[in-house]
Image 1 (cartoon, rainbow, N blue to C red):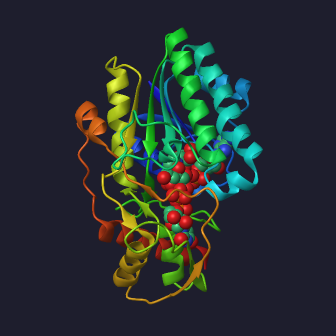
Image 2 (image 1 turned 60 degrees about the vertical axis):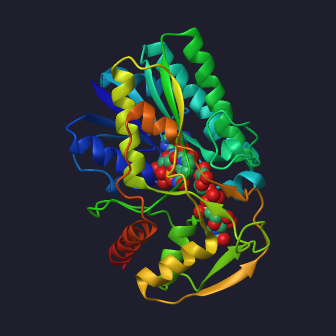
Length: 328
Ligand SMILES: NC(=O)c1ccc[n+]([C@@H]2O[C@H](COP(=O)([O-])OP(=O)(O)OC[C@H]3O[C@@H](n4cnc5c(N)ncnc54)[C@H](O)[C@@H]3O)[C@@H](O)[C@H]2O)c1
Ligand SMILES: O=c1ccn([C@@H]2O[C@H](COP(=O)(O)OP(=O)(O)O[C@H]3O[C@H](CO)[C@@H](O)[C@H](O)[C@H]3O)[C@@H](O)[C@H]2O)c(=O)[nH]1
């Protein structure tokens, strides 16, 4: 039994690979290294450098490695980029996922975990947002992921195939043991950008929108530690292996922080003030997204261990320092 991790050389995928490796699972990674790094992986995990849109390549990997389950992280992830270049997102997140799913269906690989997103909800009316809330993405990124969820539901109805779509809220932090973290150059995620600003890698941090209808005027997100998110995947894999049905589950803590609160936490933990500039709202951004994760807790018995903004920021900063030494 081998687990195929697509996008395993990326930020979240590499944490997953380390966790599977720690648990003694056999793992194979497919990654085209467009935003990932081969050095983020344990040295003895095979990396197939290729594209998940290459159905023949995926089919060969599934057969040669005796894959029984797929955890699918590979994709394009930047909300504003998806507004500017929607077809990139419908290609990489929707069409390429279709190819991957087709290879699984053809080879009888019947367990599939998908990286979905809170962006499928758009601007939810109910906060915290449950899984059965209306799905109204406000960016092509969110739509591209929702389309993949729909394909998975249809394939599961037609074939011997079960899936878990995990809708991640905002993933942050790094491996508490310091083995991997978010390494992408030019990253756009708030905690990563703030950590870079605190370490002097960026001259300033732009705050996108201070006129939102929130307490301090900045947008609110539910930041989940990457280690807790990976823990949810391990439980989802276990459940599918035990015959569990297809399911969709939110992954978040159920409370949010504003952009200003995150900046304050990074300043406090790092002890370094950095410049902030107030800018206009960013296209495709929601005002407030916070998870109702009761299904994840009830169905998987998930219990977060790192639900603490200070800890998330501490791990993000520690990784950023390590990365600075690595790249110097
Ligand atoms: N980071 C977040 O806050 C967040 C939130 C919700 C959902 N997600 C989803 O989680 C997944 C992982 O995100 P991440 O933050 O680790 O991003 P990332 O960019 O670090 O990782 C993506 C990985 O996939 C690889 N890749 C991309 N397209 C590929 C393709 N066609 N074939 C093979 N490899 C390919 C990249 O090289 C990279 O290693 C994505 O699907 C993303 O949409 C992330
Ligand atoms: O330099 C920055 C970066 C971000 N923000 C704001 O911070 C918030 C969070 O932004 P970011 O960290 O970029 O995450 P999101 O745009 O919320 O999207 C992330 O979270 C989604 C789930 O909610 C995922 O699906 C996406 O892949 C992931 O990029 C938003 O209000 C941004 O406008 C800033 O003000 N300045």
